[in-house]
Amino acid sequence: FIVVSFAALNYENLNPSFYVVSSLIVAFIFLFGFGMGRIYASPVKELLKKADKVSKGDLKSDLKVKTKDEIEELSKVFSKVTEGFEKSASEMEMQKKASDIKFKTKDIVSEKVIDALEAKVKNRTADLERAMVQIDQLRAEEKEVLDLGKKRKK
Image 1 (cartoon, rainbow, N blue to C red):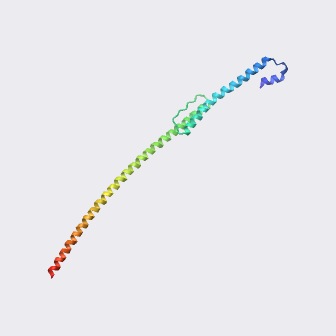
Image 2: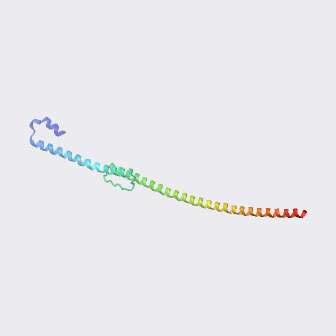
């Protein structure tokens, strides 16, 4: 901008070397801007890739950005957040396994209790059937005794 301002003030006395120097300055400014953009954009792209992986469930990919600025701090914080997510996910998995074991244990205990109750019912039913047979036998014997008593009275 400064070079263009001086050129505008003294545009009649410009020689070809001014155009060469101006072109070199413009090229330098463009290349410097492009290089700085790539230096600052590549760590941000890495952060975006990591964020995409995390959103898809990959919590184990590691992110190490060495820029010695705010982007490096941001990547460290992002790594801590993903570590927290990974820890929470592993804790949830362990709790799920523990609850599955508890449910399986309760199912086994319930099955054993049911089996024991069924066995008791079968035993009691057999006892009841035996008692019914004995009652029927006693009734038959009582009937015989009564019949004998009636025959003696006659």
